[in-house]
Image (cartoon, rainbow, N blue to C red; front, side):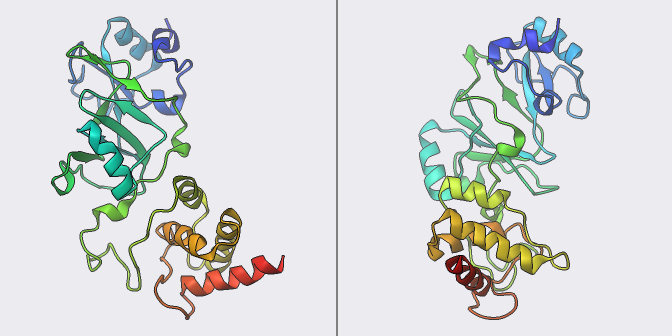
Length: 262
């Protein structure tokens, strides 16, 4: 029997390969893996169907570009979104709160438990319980449908930067970016970043023109988008200087003149 047939109760039939290849079976009514090597092993659909047929649960591996924000207190979710910009189009309901799945550019990042003493864990390693697993009578469930991994929002890595002077985490001339509206932030994250020595200056102008179009010429909102996008650039542009070859404000003004001339 195929995994898609066994797992149809998730209303995710057929389960896309990019998600199926991250699944691992867990013991019945338990969060424990069925196999000690579950994290390094990739299960076939036939193997997963076998374990599903035995009424086992599932875990979804994090890492390799995926992380999960584990909110352990249901009423903290709104605050997490308002204060820290933590939101996702892929949310799993848990016994105590929610799992917010996001893409990440961080590599070799360790899991952080009770970040800043708050009821939230940032999981970059291991696995998270996945629907329709049942533990202690509670069934994990998706809040909405299952998007593709590329549709997930990017985890705001600046949350892990303790101070602006942290070595290797902040560049000179960098202000803390303000997360734009969710739609604008997602658009900025998907805009190709600029890379020095690979047409970076042109890429910055092109990006700024897109941000101006998205905000109908509102330079303040476009700059917020540009700062959010700037996190992905190598190296980042200077967001504080008004002038200079590496000034993001200057590049936005150049793009604004071009945009108004259209």
